[in-house]
Length: 140
Image (cartoon, rainbow, N blue to C red; front, side):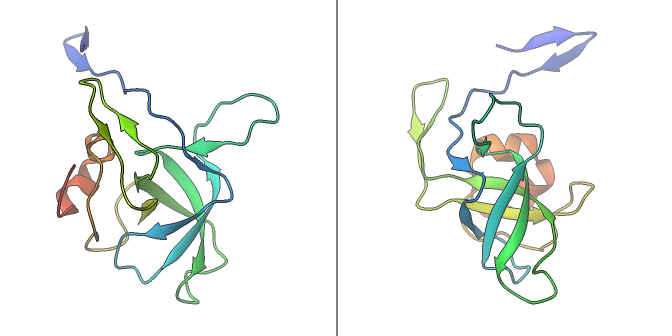
């Protein structure tokens, strides 16, 4: 249910199970040349002591390129998680799951690094990141 504050409509982000912990190797879903990415941090994560931080669809994450061109490797880069294997339960009761965990590389100001995205993008990520939604071939 949207809330109206000061004439602005605010939607509450649905609770999604965080299924991609720090240290996971995920696929890169854009055409920057990177193949595999390693999650090293979830931006804005607030958790419990000794609990491993984890990300869900639509989260801003810090990654390193695990497999790909040398110019991208061994650097800390930003990315957005666009797919996860663990089922996402939507408010209408539908559960959506994907074949892989995948992310798209972004710049520090939130623009995608690549020019196209391979595969579908979850609606939860497309709602939060409109520039990624514009590039997506399919939003599920």
